[in-house]
Image 1 (cartoon, rainbow, N blue to C red):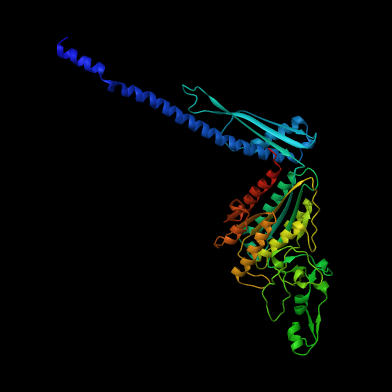
Image 2 (image 1 turned 60 degrees about the vertical axis):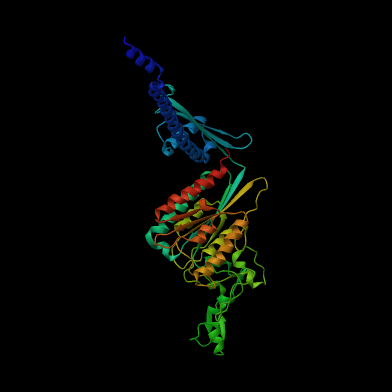
Amino acid sequence: MSELGLASARRLMRDERGNIAPFFAVVSIVVIAMIGMTIDYTRANLVNAKLQAAIDATALMLASNASTLSSGALTSEANTYFKAIYTGANLSAATITATYSNTTTPQVVVTATASLKTTFLNLPPFNQSAINLSASSTIQWGQSRLRVALVLDNTGSMADSGKITALQTATKNLLAQLQSVVVNNGDVYVSIIPFVKDVNVGSTYSNASWIDWTDWEAVNGSCSRSYYSTKSSCQSANATWTPAAHSTWNGCVTDRGPPTSTTSQPAPSPQNYDENVSAPVTGNLATLFPAEQYGSCPLQLAGLSYNWSSMNTMVNQMTPNGNTNQAIGLVWGWMSLVGGGPLTAPAMDPTYQYQQVIILLTDGLNTQDRWYTNQSQIDARQQNTCNNIKAAGITLYAVQVDTGGDPTSTLLQSCATDSSKFFLLTSASEIITTFQTIGNNLSKLHIAK
């Protein structure tokens, strides 16, 4: 070899640039492998979350009749429920088991094990063909009890776009969800408060001491001169006004506060009885519930109960009519949880924890209360009510059904306990899915693990 050839060979052997390509080849393989591993494990985490959600739902479904099933039947139903609920990626070797025990506290335990085939980890250098997954859910009774007030808009606009029908379906589905987690009577109580401008406490209470008849008697009666239709006009004509019998009252009451007259509409009293659940006191008119013969009086409210059949029958009878006063529905929903007027809240057993919840659904903005037809004035009083409810430790869900292009209600957003408990819906069908979501959340209050 010539001197020139030898020199060239020596330079080539000393030149390290020739190692760069193999180095990058090795690094690229490692990087791709790491990316692939990340993709597989991220996918596995997402699938495992769906697996856990399906197992939680399966355990809740089993809860209603677990004590009556054999071990084999319980596991069989668990598998049936799981297959109907699970919507994630295909799993390999999925095994679902369920057990029920009643040694100290009744409980159902549902577990799942499965594997997910890998896409990248099955390649060298990992050679891992699957990732193992697992989930477990325990339903225990005797630790927490639920009390839920359903405050439901029954105003005239609920007749539009199928909203009242969807609300009826959604409410009955929610009642079924809540009933499914009950083992002993009293585990779950529910009240139903249909509202419009007023609420209907029931005409059978016409002799109750907590009713204020001042306004009602001023416009319901007869004048000795028949062409005068109110007490004030009758007396102005020096005629005699005879109030109608209280038994003719239709059961509607309006917002509490100072007694009003037919000639003036004073502002609410400083006591703000329309914003709280202070007990009515005989002789103190501001604390009493003012009777009103409202022409669009809604269905009579129902206090806390676990008579599921009766509640379903009531829901079927809801009819849309009248104007919107969310605040009166809210305060009566709150009243149903603590008792007052015609409502009695069952005593709480100190050995249990209690979760108290109000679900407010409305399709409209406030239009009228006892004093105002101005939305901002009504909203300001309702905001105080919402603040008082939350300060009392009650969880507040707010659902706005907006099928007519109304602005998003900042009031309802503020009223909800947190942003996850405010729902803005744009179609009637969403009422059904939203109530199902809320029902799942409430039912999970019984999930111990």
